[in-house]
Image (cartoon, rainbow, N blue to C red):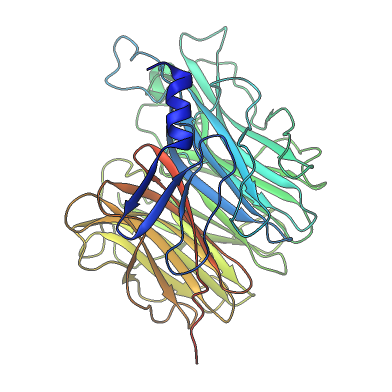
Length: 448
């Protein structure tokens, strides 16, 4: 069967019933989602590529904005002398719904150069829609170098000012190094500025952060955190600057979140002199110019001689509540844990396991809803393949309701993302069978 026939069969003839959920394949065409208890699950990605790691953001108009990466069929070979490579050819795609997920636009490629995205589960691209409707996207990109034997990866930013119909040509935000760090960085790279994140302040400022190798002087050295800021909604960026030197676990992705009044929170995995690596939160009260000392999410120490490739995900509700979800093996059992700060990130409560009965749980994401509700999604292995799950708190994270499975359990589903509308409607997307699936759930506001 040729490629056109595959696309035709994929887009028009696939209709499967999976565990009570109707799956509608839309390929590169808009689809329809039935609202209600048994919503249709819409396939957004192309059938010919392997798609992964969706990320979602709601706009001020209620629009649903989704990005994901699609791995191209041809990938780089492992360089001589390496045991693996992080060199990867992917594209970043965007789709948008303005009717609550009933229909989606035809996906648009975000990156201007084919295959130039360095994106996968441990370096997940970020999307934020600001109050003016501008769509901001931050990702890592491949760069061929003329002065080094191996390629580099850069911190890149783009935006759309027309609702996602087009994206500006992406800009590299990091300083490009003159020296070749191939013998230090490893993984098939000559230098790296990646594992980053982005947050947009209430004033429209765009803050980007990434882990940087420029100060590494030996294999296995710690990474540094650099950042770049735009004060004009992404039109221009200041030169990148050092945030924290030689303290970051070099392959654990960062995350960031703003409070409504502009307090900025940044999470990282901090490498302590004693040898343990714990997720921490830093707070800035001056727009990211300075940050507080790191505050650990748990008092227990994760002693690990290497990078676990795990971020801590942040969300805020007002000025008081700061939420964090992350994977840790410092707790028993290892898995996804949740904690909450009631004093603006100065201290955090004792962590609690999100899925205590799972054999393994990982890849959490957070969303804040109305009336003090907090939504956690993750993937876990209980019996059979991995599956994506949802759990909700209606009291600012003090207690959580039952665990709710997403999609079907017939094949593995991973890397979920979640967003919540003002009326409590829950939007979820995840990766399953190398496809990106989306579903709109009924409002899940607690009835009191």
